[in-house]
Image 1 (tube, rainbow, N blue to C red):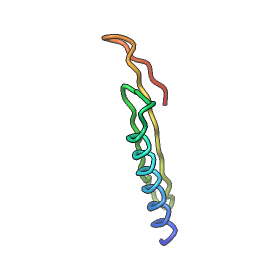
Image 2 (tube, rainbow, N blue to C red):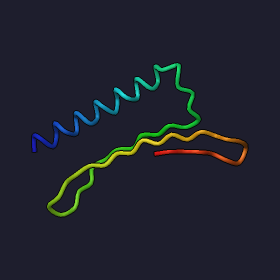
Image 3 (cartoon, rainbow, N blue to C red):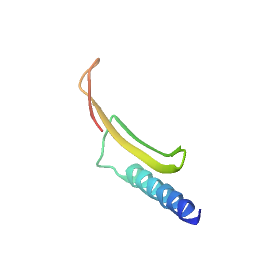
Image 4 (cartoon, helix red, strand yellow):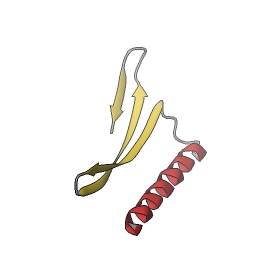
Length: 67
């Protein structure tokens, strides 16, 4: 149980650090940047998942992105 709490605390600290770095950065001018993370629990298995996504507009009705 302690390992799970420690892992969640490390993950939360990493997410906060990345968000602070992104907010402090003046070189990145992204149209949209998102970071999603969360635990996955199923029966006897526990794991987590995360995703980072960047989207840039190409025009009024078009956009380009990569995860």
